[in-house]
Length: 241
Image (cartoon, rainbow, N blue to C red; front, side, top):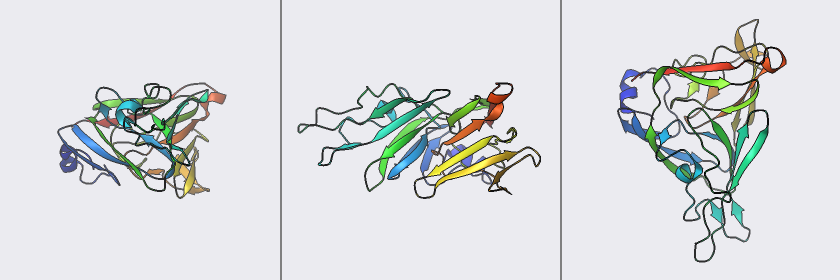
């Protein structure tokens, strides 16, 4: 699921999963499927004109809501480090003539730029879909700063799989007792703890690498330096086409 250029060069690396990405060079698109219930969603493309909800999840035709009864609204919650869910959006229910659509607070207040993530609630019994078109960020040192405390993040590049062994998305510089939480609509939360003695992530006391199952899956990261040095734990990725 990624770029045709990547597929040839990275045949041994997990660059995709449940979504489909096709492109020329480093430009492509992602067919996104948002499962019923809660998901942590990230967009690893730089889209045009921007990465706001109006571009990524346009509700101009009322697709992300239902008039009812009962009225159903897709919800999006953005995380601000140190403050929590201070920004939230709700899909506006369409009127009879379908004129009252969009997002309640305008849709531009939440942007899923590469590296960031948000909680999305799908209130329906079937998946919601979207198509994202954009370019892939490239470079040797793509830094995603994990600030002290909680971070809601995703990979800057469109890659998924083992966060320790995948050379594109290696997250190996954990600090003692750092936490990483992935979320699955069916399995719910999986908690990983960084064990400094083993220099490895553990799940339930067993050495286990954190895994993301598709390129649009984000996760929570807790940086414990908030109690000591108050420094960022930078997640550095690399992709050079």
